[in-house]
Image (tube, rainbow, N blue to C red):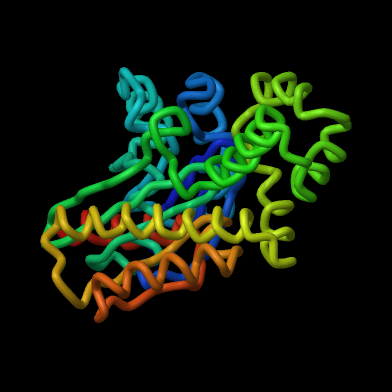
Length: 299
């Protein structure tokens, strides 16, 4: 049996999955983070470990190709290190792309369309007639509008406004302070300037709860998040000269799990592109490696 291996290397884990040439999953392996920007040496070790683990049950079979989608890959100064390690360890043809590209291929089954991702960060990626374009993905300092980090930050910024202007603390502010173990917004800097993006994003569920209870500020933040993500999507469509019949896929906890964000997003996109169709279900990003690999194998 011949097969390919797809690798999804993220900030917390690496998943390697073997697919037969019909796209059926036949084996898998998992290890630690695969984002080379966290610690390149350890990430390479983790990636190789996941691939080896995936390959163990298939030692008597033939691997034709390895496709790797790695978070942060575009920011790596010298890709030679991981490339040489893969060549030395496996001796199998491979490609390395950003993890967003395998997610795109997975959800759109290797076909044209736009993928918008919103989790801790946010980005839109489009493919049309062989062209690839992107909008967003700038990180939390330069952008990431509509992401979990951005949503949470709006609440924290509003808390400082209440403190500065002497406005009575909202219920959301009191909930956040209780969770942090603080009595006053004046203590907020202790958390904000030492917290990770993920720790800040973890406050999104409190905003969602308040929005579902009718809190106007929280509702508006979630609707704005959907609008920002729609704008990113439409920017990619414009870059690719998509005028109609575009397929839009979504991924990430914010867009898939928060109805107010998703509804706002779909409404804004359809107002500009009424014929747009949406893919709302989720699949493993490693499946995108299968579709990309098959294109290379068939060349």
